Image 1: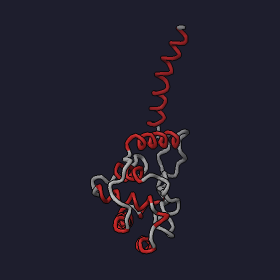
Image 2: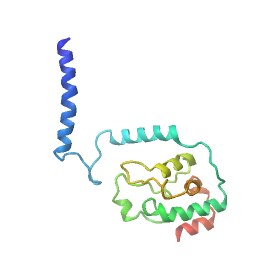
Image 3: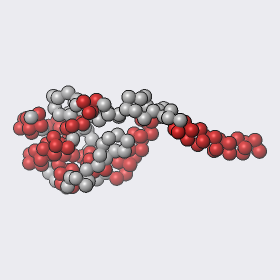
Image 4: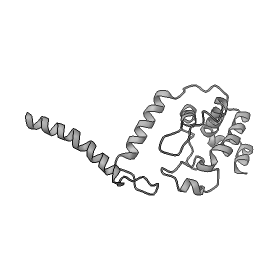
Amino acid sequence: MRRFIAGFVLCLVVLPVSAYLYIRAGRMPVATSAPPLPFERFLAETALHARIAKEMPTTVPIAADEANLAAGGRIYRENCAFCHGLPDHPSTAAAKGMYPGPPQLFIMTVTDDPPGQTFWKVTNGIRLTGMPGFSASLSTEQRWQVSLLLANADKLSPAILAALKQ
């Protein structure tokens, strides 16, 4: 029993000290071109999905009408397209250099995501990804408008698609 307790205590000390020394020695991959750590993607995605499921709004307070979708398109072009791209356009140089890479939302649409999930991401941002939170720079209505635009990306009118592609 003593050996078990000694081994347990040793692990409690050795593992954190080893992790600290690994980080302080400059061995931890921090460049966007570096390969991810084991389980990095799993841990980040699991934590993100659990938090969003717990906090995202389940009702949408505005209609997905042409006016709100057009407004969402303007907001998207001004605030989101630089990283997340536009319909029928290649990724930007900034997006190609990010890790993790931002999803190109009109190539791999998020139309299967509930608008509340997108609203949570737009409002809060996502740590360690480059995705900022827009709660201080966009109104609640604007954040809902861009969230509805993305939720309906596969059903946008030709006029809204044309405005996005300008």
